[in-house]
Length: 127
Image 1 (cartoon, rainbow, N blue to C red):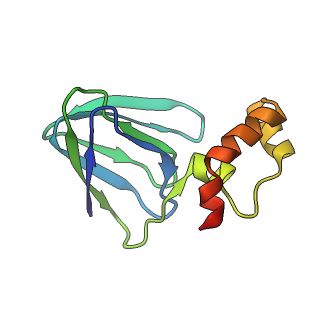
Image 2: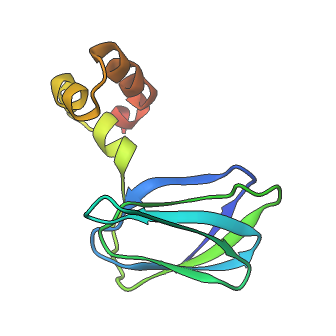
């Protein structure tokens, strides 16, 4: 279990837990949450104090505080080692890096855009 605090506008970016389902319980505030199925269907909901939401194992999901006050949740996992893989960090900050041609084709953007995005994740390559 973990407590996560969100400032107004705070984001837990798109990520996945390959070895666990996650459930969040809202302690204070409210969050907009969502996950994307393997059929690329987005499920979203605004959850408020006292409510829960479940993110199925392995699916990309996110949480954002679109409110004007801080929010906090308790997150629980059905594994002691859920793992976390952030989508953007993984694709644009890996070491060694993913080839630009792979990312240009996958995201249908130019090489300059890929290099610009990678530069924002450059510190990840230093870790």
